[in-house]
Image (cartoon, rainbow, N blue to C red; front, side):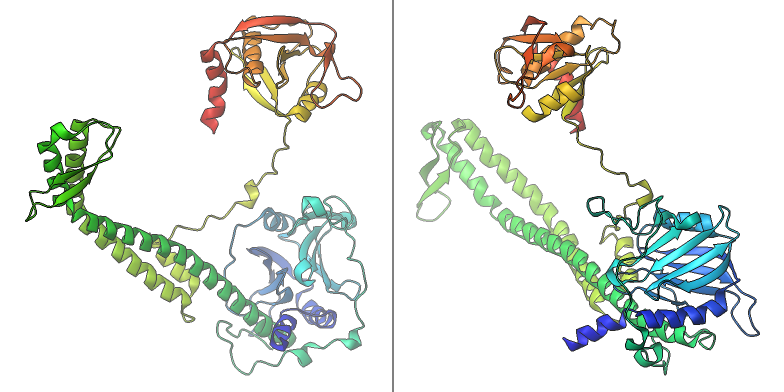
Length: 522
């Protein structure tokens, strides 16, 4: 338990440590030009700055800002860089567009808390700033414009629990509460030991430029890298195990099938016995007992029959099965060999995935290249759309293209009729049974609905009612403005102050035409 607490503490920076980093990095980075913003999805980025490098210093400085919920941090990136995993979301693109070419004017801690603001001047759109909220599992990156208005967010608030501090177009506000007194918190030199040797995967660059940042990078960067590798290895192992389970099932099934093929000769002999005793077979028998001439002593043999087949069909069934088993007997050995080889290859991938010396990404890529694993499908965040709101009706197209709306339920019927229909639209409902409200949209006040389209709508009204199997039915037809909802009436119940009743003979082909686009879509 204590070890777990210690690991969690190591993967976060307190407010005092952030203040020390801001002071150290500010001296190095203020006044430098931002040449690039390198995304490291899902939650990290690099600010690539060009300094007036001291003799022997680096040509550029790469400042890493991480909003990782398990390892939010800030430091120079001098060690080997692990590529980001996942799609590059719109926040990274917007940040590059807004900040590229601007100079870093100020790096400052906000309210003495785990908040850091990077202010830029010379940006194309005017004053711009990048705000890093390095607050653990609530960590976030915010792009700010004039007056600290929120232009974009790395992690948008969920729709159901939107954070009032982080609303696009509104002024950013700091999180509630106050930071603990700095004197109560451990400093970087107290919390993170000076690296005595190069940590695996983190090659030393110029640690003398920012010694505190170097301690943070080696400690937190190493821990985060180990955690990411462990997560990637676990994810890969699960993917391989799923494939391996299916491959083993296939191998087992093929072996059992091959064992069944060994009995093909017995199937043929049973067919011969049935053929020789054809006169004793009758439709409806599920088995018959015959003398087995092919076994010494001619014992009685019980042969199963299909009671739905006539005698000749039962005989043909056994010979057809014999031929199928013979064909399979010739094909199955090569299939079993391929299945066995695939199981062995997947077992090798599984061993490689568990090997701490192997990079799980390289193992994954090699397995995908060999066709052993399917490539991971990453959603493109730039193409992600909000789900369309649910409508209380289904949409169909009449024969000349007019829209027909059909209510989904009793409550939806009311919504369709009184909130999703105009006064001159045509309203339809079965006269002698409950059912869906149907609305035929009429484009203009002076437009007369086409009679064929009225028949289409009437057929849908009958189809979405208990009368769908009837050959004839009556349908109420009225303009929507003549439909009224009595006070206190239950859902779907209405009254009419006008309209007419239409008797129709149901045409199944008309209903099939109206429903076909929906079935094709399904």
